[in-house]
Image 1 (cartoon, rainbow, N blue to C red):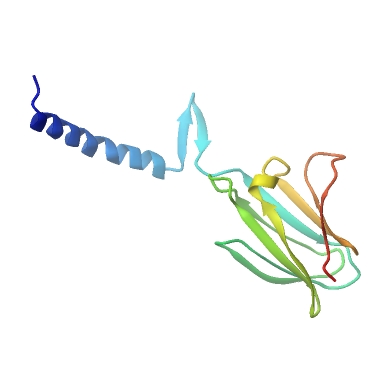
Image 2 (image 1 turned 135 degrees about the horizontal axis):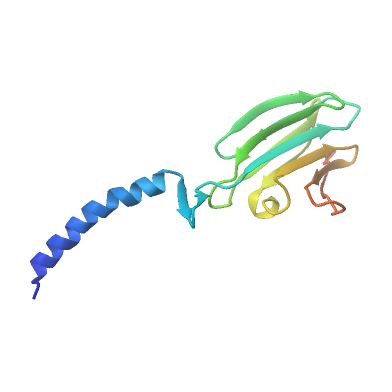
Length: 149
């Protein structure tokens, strides 16, 4: 029969041996299941904003962790970036749009809970009345944000 002090010694010894193994698995960013690699981060995703207006469009996009800075897009101009959706599926990018000094609005350009099943290549087209978001599913109604001004 094992007394309680021997049990605790065995328990703590196993904890000390197993902990580094578990930490290295979690920190390696990948696990394997049935020979397939399971990433600890979500899918690689791309967002592109296309200015289809006759004026210069100011765009400033950011997330909680990344600020992409202010960009000016000419008619036909494109601005985009790629990122990994986080493991918790809570990635959020929002962008502010302006025409000169006129603020057009701030909109959620990528919201993982909304967009992770809608697109991996998320395209936004700015038009006279607002901004339209397209995914990979053909003939699906695009997302739409109306300009404030």
